[in-house]
Length: 151
Image (cartoon, rainbow, N blue to C red):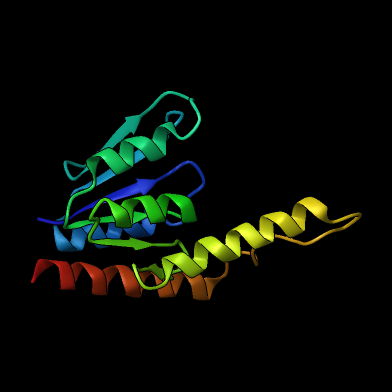
C-alpha cells in the first residue's frame, strides 16, 4: 500500500495532501523538527525528530519504501529518496523529481548556490512565490501518482 511522507517544516501543501490521501485511503506521515498541528484522523501521523542537521531528512530516507511518495522542496532529500528506492518524490509546486531529472536539479541547485554566494547587493533571488497554479498542479500530480502506485 502506498504511503505519503511529508517533509513538513516548510511545506505549503499539507492540507491538500491530507485531502487527497483521505480520498485514496492512504496513510500520511508528517515529519518535522518541531511539533506541527495535524488533523486528528487515523490516516495521519506525526513524527517529530531532533533539531539536528538533516534529522528529518534522515528519518524520511530511512522509512521510504518502493510505494512511498515523498513531498519535499529539498532537492538533496529528493535525490536521497530516489536512490533509496522511493516510489515518487513530488515538490509542493507539483514538479515530480525522477531518476532522469534529479541529476540536473542537483547541478542547477549547486550552480545557483554558488551564484548566490558570490552575489553582491540584491544578488540573485530564490524561487518564485508559491502560486494558485502550483497548488492545482500539485493536487493533480499527487492524485495521478497515487493512482499509478496502486496498480
